[in-house]
Image 1 (cartoon, rainbow, N blue to C red):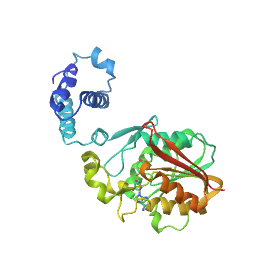
Image 2 (spheres, rainbow, N blue to C red):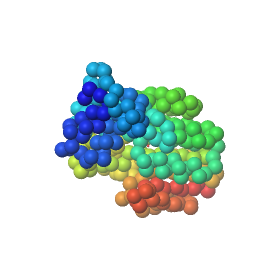
Image 3 (tube, rainbow, N blue to C red):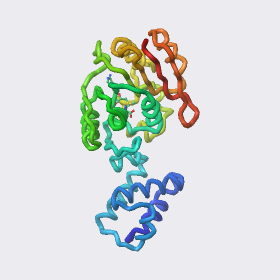
Image 4 (cartoon, rainbow, N blue to C red):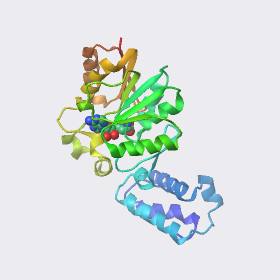
Length: 277
Ligand SMILES: C[S@@+](CC[C@H](N)C(=O)[O-])C[C@H]1O[C@@H](n2cnc3c(N)ncnc32)[C@H](O)[C@@H]1O
């Protein structure tokens, strides 16, 4: 792999029997952009430029980590989200495209304040702050996740009020116009059916509910929201489509109105909005 033009071929040869070609090329281009700052067209125009030994080693290392099925975002330690570049590490979930859709939906509303519960990398809170003048707060139980979120807020030039809190040890939250959460909802028993790259690398604190109740977080956050939302305030959740009806019933029983489910790009009910009278 002495020159730029060899990198794609190296990735393809090393990874072809584990992954599909399109995926391999997209990882190769992301890696090239991350290490050399080259765009796709630079890869062609500058294909004869030599690579230093250090750079070659970086690409070799990336390919070795990809072989272990580690997600590219954890290898490069960055993820794109709603037009922003965010740092990620093993303490935060990799932000997902459906969460971008949730942010997009929230941004169709007018609000002066919002609270993100279980902020992780800070992806939701930071993209709301970046695209509105609202005052944004965010909480997470994990200090390690909050450290990443704080760095991301700083690098993206926004101010967010971060708090370390376990919502199950919390009886009240600040008064806000919007509460949003993408909480953990995977049952421990579902671990065996999940993709290896998720279970092996993503933080279990962000994914799993340990007490066998997939609605555990929705119940607690729904209940806190009844006391913390301003009049006509809105609660937004990312959900698993499997629980769409149960969450709708739960929020109706709490007294929320105008409950709306929204499908993601794959035509699955992945978001819910409820209004507090
Ligand atoms: C599914 S992740 C969502 C992360 C980020 N908001 C996103 O959409 O990518 C859930 C987050 O909830 C946090 N969390 C788990 N248990 C919590 C608790 N009891 N109180 C507050 N946050 C909690 C986890 O640390 C994790 O960052």
